[in-house]
Image (spheres, rainbow, N blue to C red):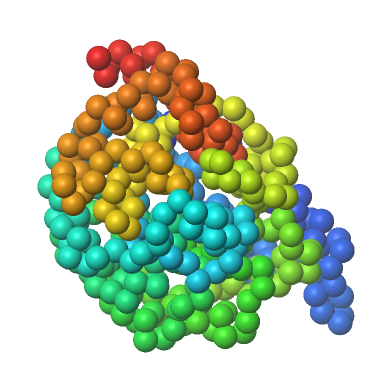
Length: 360
C-alpha cells in the first residue's frame, strides 16, 4: 500500500534475527541436537517478512488528495467462527454494538459496480474487515465478480484458515484471488496445515500466500514449529506481536515497548489511512476506518448514496482536517487509537500544513 516515511527494514531484520537467535540457543529440534537451520531463508521457501510492504511505498505527501482511494476494505462477513480474545469480533464484544451478518450478494454486486465507476482503478480491494470472509457461501463468486470488472489492481483477503478445504481452495484460486493472508492460530491441527498446503500448492503463479501468527503467548518451541510447518507452504511468513489497535477495546498482554512487526513505538498525529483507504461494512454502510469495530465512525450508506460522494464528502473531509490540524485527540475513536503508534508504516505529520493547503 502507499505511504510516506517508512520504518527502516534493517530494524525489522535486527529484531527478527535476535528472536531467531534466541530460539536457536534454547531449542533442540531433533534428537541429534541440530540447529534450527530450516528457519533460515536458504532452507525455507517463504520470505521472513511482514505482511505489509515497508519498501517501495508511494510518498503520500506528493499525491494527496486522491481522486480514488488506493485501498478499499469490503466486508463479506462480520461473523467469525474463531474466539480470539484480542479481537472485538472473536471475543463477542462487538455483539453489544451491532448485529452480525453476511453481505447480501446483490448489494455486493451493486457496490462493486459503484467502485468500478471511480475516476481511477482501485489498487487493492480487500475482501475483509470484521469477520471471517470464507463464511460467506458466495465468497468465490465475490472474488470473480470483482476480478471481472477489471477495475482493481489486486483482490485479496484475510482468513483464519479454518475453512480452507480442497474444493473451496480450487474455487477461490480459479476465481482469481491475487493474495491470501492467513492468520494462523497458536494451536492448529495437521489437517489445518494440510489444507493451507493444498491452497499453496495449487495457487502457484496465481495467488500469493502470506502466513502470520501472534507470537506473544507462544513458547519458543511453538514458534519453531510454526516456522517449520508453514515456511515451505507460504510466500511470506512472520511472527507478529499483539497491539492495542482497536479503539475502546482492551487487548491484554501487549508489549508496550514494541510494535506489531517488532519496530519501535512512535507517536504519530495524522492518520494516513484516512487519505488513501475507506472501509465498507457487511450492511453496506461505510466507515472512516478499518478498525471501526463499533460502526461508530459511519460516513454514509451505499444502499442510498454513491461511494464517490462519500469519498469526496464533508464528513470524511472533516475527519482529515481534524487530523491535519493535530486535533485527532478530540475525536472519540481516533483519540484513543493506538494503530498509528503500533502498526502504521506511514508518517505524514511533517507535511500536514502543506497537505491542508492543497485541500482548501
